[in-house]
Length: 102
Image (tube, rainbow, N blue to C red; front, side, top):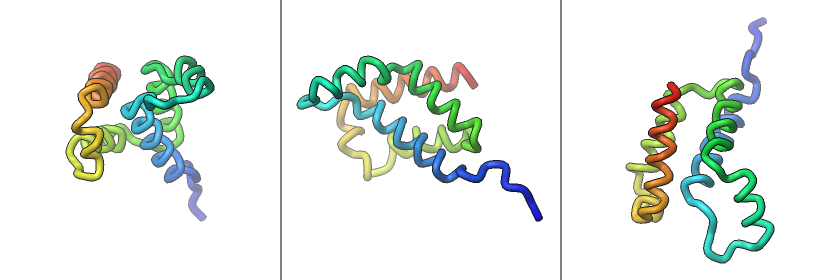
């Protein structure tokens, strides 16, 4: 019998993708006061990096994180984000900080 060191690896991969997408999309224009308050508290770059690092402790690899960055930058599914200059700036900041860390 082999031991599964990362039993929820697929969940952590999905969570990392959702975290990156939420950060890149930013706060919507019609956000409620509750959403604005939560974004101020948890939507900073440092919190996003901490969440990704937590997912990495549970089986996500550095290559998978970089793959998500390139997927957002190049795949046609994310053309609305690719056309948004602010979103691409946030993605660039995240990529720069990630490359400095690793």
